[in-house]
Amino acid sequence: MKKIDFYILKKFFSTFFFIILLLTVIACVIDISEKTDDFVKSGLSAKEIFFQYFIGFIPHIAALLFPLFVFIAVIFFTSKMAGRSEIVAILASGTSFRRLLRPYWIGGALLALLLWYANQYVIPRANAIRTRFEAIYVNGNSSYNPLVQRSSNIYRRLDSFTYAGMHYYDTVNKMGGPFFMDRIKNNKVVYNLRAETLKWDTASKKWTVTNVVERELNDRDEKVWTSESKELDFNFKPYDLSRDEYAKDKLTTAELDRFIRLEELRGSEGLNTLKVERHRRYATPLSILILTIMGVSIAARKVRGGSGVHLALGFCLAAAYIILDKFSTVFSTKGSFPPVIAAWIPNIIFAFIAYYIYRKAPK
Image 1 (cartoon, rainbow, N blue to C red):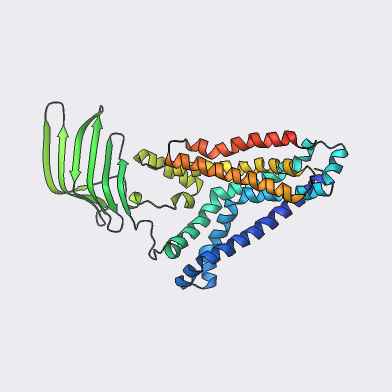
Image 2 (tube, rainbow, N blue to C red; image 1 turned 60 degrees about the vertical axis):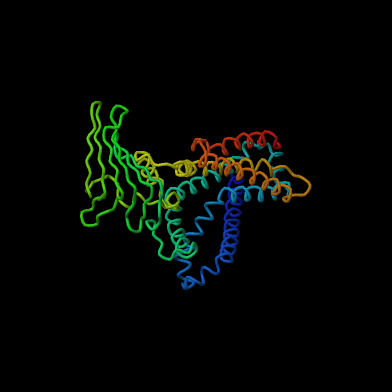
């Protein structure tokens, strides 16, 4: 590490933290203007709103735009250096462009580690605060609880051979139906249960089914019997049947991994959204390094128009990255695109673009 490295790192971090502070304040002002009516209707004081909402919103918006902030900061201060012929002087002194990138690598790696740690532990806790406030006061549900909703077409895998499901489930009354359960052996149904309703018994901590029809089948005959009610002990509880739309944002990575494994065991549908989020928590920090190298390669060339040209080109590339990321996410969550590819393909494509721009940068 030489003086030039510390000089560039100082400019890197000072510009980045100034930009993230400025744009986060702007984002908060815009958010306040959009939610003014909700804040007034909530009846909370300014202090309560800050600690019940903005203490979670600020980390969320900062993490969401973190790679973009790094990209803008790199382009901005590097373009200023190029405009003052500092880049030319450094290269003319015998320093290679590859050597010039060392402080950028170090700064980008430190910021990537910061975002990685925040994505694993800090941001999920902040999102828990933010989403609770939005669910209560913004979405109009003043008695928000992830259980208070009505789910439909629920299916569960109870064990290696048993499957169950129901047409609807009311999480308020902890009751659903019509309910079915099938036990399979050698690819054949050997036991079948049908019930009109399934309800949680808070006293016994078990499920009770009513108007039950049971069938036991084998190769030769079939046994059928009915009962008005029957108590069953399943491996799922009322909370497991709820669908919290904010779950992927509120869970730490370790909790998200456990949740995905549990839902896969139960045979739940729509897990691609959770898997994309899981992979993105690792892919996004790496994008900081890619965007950093891309930014310095763009801004190191002195051009007529100065920083404006560099920033315009940078914003176009950033917009292309965001669009590609959104498209890959939609293809995964709404289609059959593998989640790991959906999360990593923007980085893969832009890594090649960054390498191409690096090869064309002034040496």
